[in-house]
Length: 107
Image 1: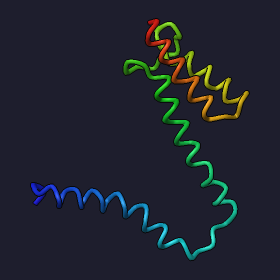
Image 2: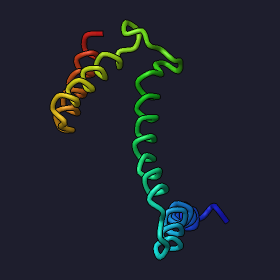
Image 3: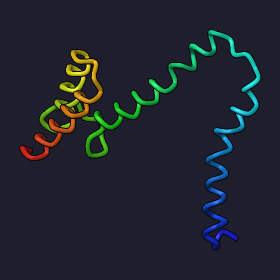
Image 4: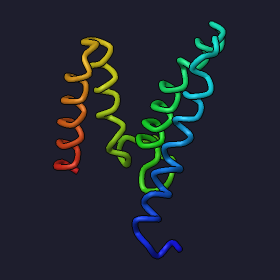
């Protein structure tokens, strides 16, 4: 049954689409309390922070906060400082990509 790529791709599309669509369908007519709405507003930020933190602090499959071993630490500090100063995603991303490129070339 799963030898057919069309069936496999259709099944993957279905299990990707349904968890996103069903809550939208079922909850679209319901009123959400302000406290639940406020609580749910933190979910994307929390997920993004967890993804970024795990990428920065885990170097070569282990937790590493030594800036001499983990070359992602210094560029991340630079990105945080630029983001706080400019409030610009463009400048933060540009500085981060530039800094990590320099770190890869130097080390």
